[in-house]
Every structure is written in structure tokens, then in C-alpha cells.
Amino acid sequence: MFSETFLDVLNHEGVVSVTSWSDDNVHVANTWNSYLRITDDGRILIPAAWFNRSQKNIDAQNKMILTLGSHEVEGKMGMGTGFVIDGTAEFLMEGAEYEMMKEAFPFLTRVLTVTPEKIRQTI
Image (cartoon, rainbow, N blue to C red; front, side, top):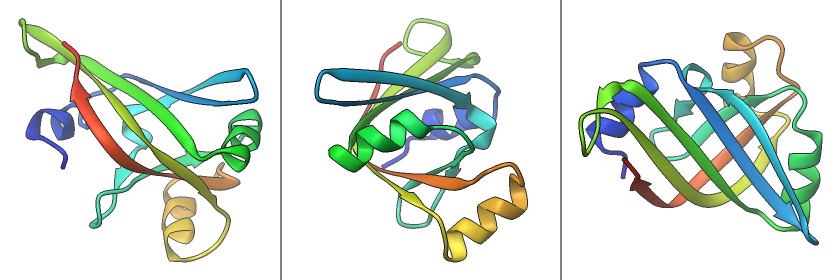
């Protein structure tokens, strides 16, 4: 599901926007490319310390959109590329994946898990 270009973007720093919504409430939170981890089954794990409004939105409806990119990766029209990921999300507060992420990111209080439904390269 993840292209080589997408995985290459994760090797370069950039901002990831995490967009959630419910009841006419749209919220955008940010994190870093280097914080994302890809699981063997194709989910994206993101350490979450704040993300309180995101969690309220996801608890109400589990859809979300992620955007990420890097100007250091060749895109469709030259250097620089980005991706939009539509998917479903949930928060983990325990378990093996939580413990693995907590070891890497001691500041987290939860792990945001995103299951991609659609990934598209934008530039």
C-alpha cells in the first residue's frame, strides 16, 4: 500500500497534519514525519501527547485525513512531494504497540493508530 516515494518521505523531516472532524468541528493537529511508524499490517502509528480535540472527534466518528511531505524527495514535477491519506483512526492506551511507541517517544500519553483507506500523491 505504501509506495517507495511515500516511505522515502518518512526518512526526511517534514510536518504531518492530522485532521479530524465531528459535528461541524474541524480540528488540525501537527506532528513530524520522523514520529510516524508503519506496522507490518499497513497501519500508521503516531505518538500523541495532546491531541485531545482530535480524540474527541475520533471518538464521535473515526474518519481522519493525514497530509505529509518533504521538499527533499523527488515528486511528480521535480523536487518535493506530498501525500494525502484518508483513513480510520483509534487511540491505543495499552498493549505491545503502545509500549513500543512509549519506549521510542517517552512523552506520549496515547498512540494514534491510522488505518489508510486511500493514499494519493499530490505533487
